[in-house]
Length: 250
Image (cartoon, rainbow, N blue to C red):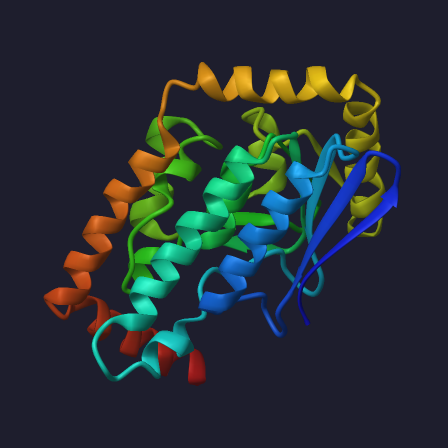
């Protein structure tokens, strides 16, 4: 359980997240993921990183129960926000391209990860969404906006609905949609094609593409996080989270 790194073949590193039962990451998990991604990108032998997950779904966001157990101030909230910020940035700033292999649900913080990835391969059962308003939080609209058009991001955000892998493929943000049992193979196929390029040149390409990005994803996401703090300070976040917790326990 936790975050692990493997190299199934030359030039490719696979960073795998495994936090049963739903891959809702605790504060430490987000920082561990950031460290693993940065370390993989720094390895001069690596030319592409695959970000994958074990279990039913790719990512269910932050561990809400961890925040609910924090009865003294907002230390868990601050930790989760900082951890997410670091993990999302580590995907974006990884020195080599990152391919996200997504199965099942990709929610909340999962959107922050895949939205900052260089390419996404998804299983047919994959769904993507930000249920933040139902969970007393805000954020990652920055990253959802990299996956779908502007009006769709607003509708998805306000309603907490999800989009399917097929829908995102139609919008051009998902590279390929495959049966779940073929997901890891398809992600490695794409990673292998990328890793076949010159190692130095692929790193320059990643830096160049980030440099012409029209949105500063770090600044934009940090701006969003300010509203999450505001929601917590005035009590609305706790009220919504408590309601969510009761409904989930039914």
